[in-house]
Image (cartoon, rainbow over all chains, first blue to last red; front, top):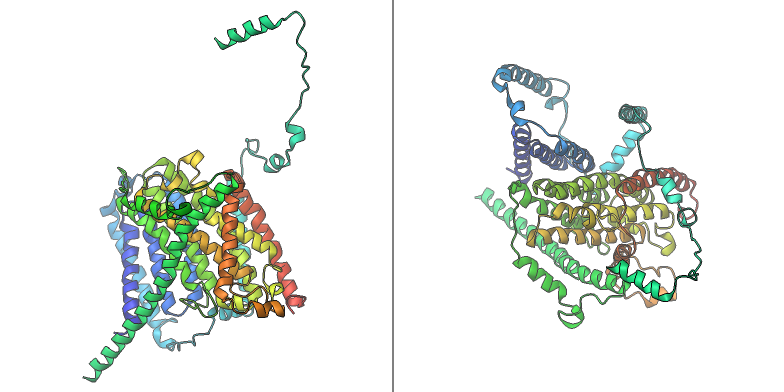
Amino acid sequence: MTFQAIVFYSFAAWLIFAAIMVISSKNSVKAALFLVLTFASASAIWLLLEAEFLAISLIVVYVGAVMVLLLFVVMMLDVDYAALRQGFVKKLPIALIIAIAFFVVLYSFLTHGEFSAEKFAEPAAKAADYSNIKALGRVIYTEYFIAFEIAAVILLVAIIAAISLTFRGRRNRKSQNISKQLAANKKNRLKIVKVDPVVSANETSDELAVNQSEKQS
Amino acid sequence: MNGSEIATIDWWAWIETSFWIVFKIVLILLPLILAVAYTTYAERKIIGYMQLRLGPNRVGPKGWLQPIADTVKLIMKEIVVPKGSSKTLFVIAPVLFIGPSFAAWAVVPFDAGMVLADVNAGLLYVLAMTSIGVYGVIIAGWASNSKYAFLGAMRSAAQIVSYELAMGFALVGVLMCAQSMNLGEIVEAQSGGVLNWFFIPLFPLLIVYWISGVAETNRAPFDMAEGESEIVAGFHVEYGGMAFSLFFLAEYANMILISFLTALMFCGGWLSPFQGMGVLEDITAWVPGTIWLLVKASFFLFCLLWIRATFPRFRYDQIMRLGWKIFIPVTLVWLPLLAVWIKAGVWPFN
């Protein structure tokens, strides 16, 4: 067994362990954290395939951003775990049938279909200075330019749809107008009032002292 | 027999390479930890002088031994695991915070060719490492079973995701100028004098990157995750002793990392500022590149402390506004401009 094979099998084992823990752990936050571990092991396996750009993007996008937001939501939710576990035995047969069917389809597809191992020659290892970032960029921005742009526009539409769905309703709620706050200056916040330093004539200095001692007590 | 012979040879080569890798890691980490210790000292002294105080001056001559005393104090303290907390995650969180902040140093070059891992996608790797550090914060906040810690974790998560976008866009500008993601090649692309450094064509991106870097390290004025005046100490409120000092160590290692990266990507890294200046270049030719890099990084590190001493903490909604409504549009405008600039071949891209 070569060193690479050892690395591959250990990360693959990690990946499967973490994936099983995602669906079996009792706590949803821990399940999300195991999903992070799954992504990290998948990224390590992609690194073995010399796809370093994809591997690191998986970390940046999924581990660094998507999962952080997912955790954000999951931590805030108050999930009743006991209710979630109800009816496990009743639903097990259906779940098993779906899982087996899915596995059979995937297995036959990967061994006999378009993506079977015989249809692809084993890729030769690239030289150390080969940059798959440049290769990927070249393909995306020339051959698949339109598909890439369409995907981007669809994502933009999805963003706008999500914002407009959540941003409806009352518009008269109290919110901070930051530009107004930043535009504030001394002139419209501070008013200097001149007070006459004159003491009225009938109030002698003795009376003033008495008044002060009364205030203190 | 033959097979076993090959196996033994392989084995020795393997041990040798691993030894050298570990040796280099130690060579990077030991000075880093020492630098962290003395950054805390420098911070207290500098901020002290800025606020007309003396700073630490009792332990050792002029307070030089203060960081050592602090370390000893932190090691001796007991680590209390709060009741009702998730024990495993509570212990793992500081490790998850410090791991990425040390791992990112693997691709930082200290001079031409002086780098632990000469990775093609170095820039992306650094971005990945700085972004997964947030897990330490989130897990610490959640596992502590404390409301203050949880609030700190939530704030940190939202803040880091927002600023990472602006940071990534700023790095795209660097990538466009250098035509490479390798940090060493990025520095080489800036050779030929101060005017070739990227801070000139990328000035708005430098500002965006720098401020996002301050936000990403959770430093004042972006220290919402800690926010002493609002949520006690934020995500690490339940941590004490060594567990706390790991958070502390990681935060300062991140600060130093951001300073180094800014120096590398925008200010010519290890290149001398006197390149192509005739006499001045000859006089300073003996200065090793590492010194120039250290000087530049120290300047940015000083700025971090300066910023902390100067600005009050941001309000939370203003942080979000700055990230989403100011920084991201600025980068989105500057990148097309930059593309046109590079394609037109006008100075400094000719």
